[in-house]
Length: 94
Image 1 (cartoon, rainbow, N blue to C red):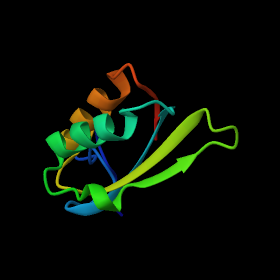
Image 2 (cartoon, helix red, strand yellow):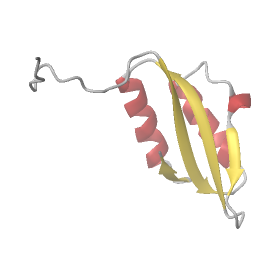
Image 3 (cartoon, helix red, strand yellow):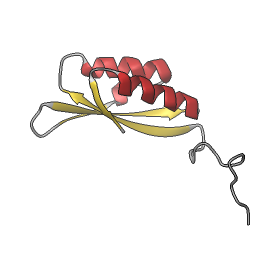
């Protein structure tokens, strides 16, 4: 029976590379989807923007975007989350 110590515990349970869905939400304004696409492609250049799923909220005020990227590392995901969550147009990143 093995035990994970702080030195051997993995930083993540993910095995890379892997498909990783990101859900990004913000107000439904002009340029939101394009802005998110540009950020995602900076960190995942092979992401195909045509695969982005868009869903408006029931009131139409917000837009949810789902981008499934081919994640290659934890630092890549961390950098992507940091940039997206720090963007003024983005309300939530899951």
